Amino acid sequence: MTQDEAKALVGKRAAEMVESGMRVGLGTGSTSVAFIKALGARVQAEGLKIRCVASSDSSTELGRSLGMDVVTLEELPELDLYIDGADEVAISPNGEFYLIKGGGAALLREKIVASAAEKFICVVDQSKMVPKLGKFPLPVEIIKMARPLVERRLADLGLNPVLRRKKDDSGPVLTDEQNYLLDCHCGVIEDPEETAAEIRSIVGVVEHGLFLGMASKVLIAGENGVEEREA
Ligand code: 5RP
Image 1 (cartoon, rainbow, N blue to C red):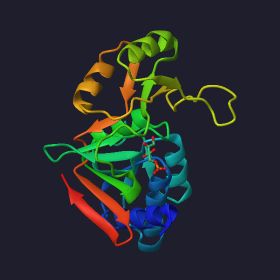
Image 2: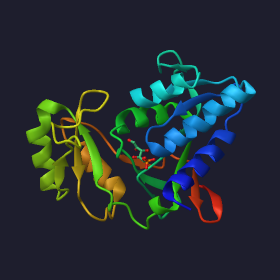
Image 3: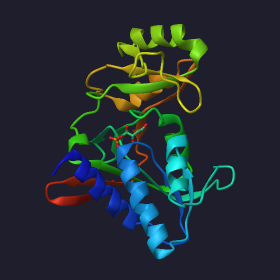
C-alpha cells in the first residue's frame, strides 16, 4: 500500500465515524484532505446533516466546495469531534498520545479547534508512529517582530530553530494568522512536557506543535487495514 492509499483508507474510516447531527472539526494536511473528501461524499450521497469548523483557510475552502456547512468557531463554539492528522505520534509512559503537528503550518488553529472539541481522533499512516518524538522538526509559531528574541531563546535551549521559508524561497512562510514558523531540529525529545513548558514560557511564542494528551484515539493505516488505538 502506498502512503497516499493509506491516507485515503484512514480518511474514509474516520469519515464513517461521523454521525448525523454532529458538530465536526476539520483538520489540515493531506490525510485531513482525504477525510474531508470522504465526509463530503457522505454529505452529498446520504444527506448527512453536520456543521463544521475548519482549522485552516484551505480546509474551509475544500469543505465548502464539497457542499459542507463550514462556519466559524464564533458561530459554532463547541464541537463533538475533531479529526486531524499528525507528523509524528508517540505513546507516553502513561499511555497518552503525544503528537507533533504543524508540518502544514496550521498548528495554532488546529490546537484551538481540537481544544473546542469533546473528542480528538488522530488519523495517520503507520510511518508516523515513532517510539519517541523529535525526528520531525518541531514547529513553533511566533510573532514576526519577536523572531530575533525567540530564535535566540530556542537556540539557548538547544532546539536549533530554523525559519520556515516558502518552497520557491521567495520569503518566509506565513500562517493563516500571519505569523512566522520556526522549525526546531532538536532531535529526540526526551521529555515533551518539559520542552512544551520551556517553549511556552518564551515571550513572542504564539503556540508550539506538541499536542500532548489531546487525542483520545488514533487510527493507524497499515498493510493490514486500519488499527484503532485508544489512550
Ligand atoms: C498541519 C498538520 C498536519 O496534520 C500534519 O502536517 C500531517 O500532514 P499530512 O496528513 O499531510 O501528512 O499538522 O499543520
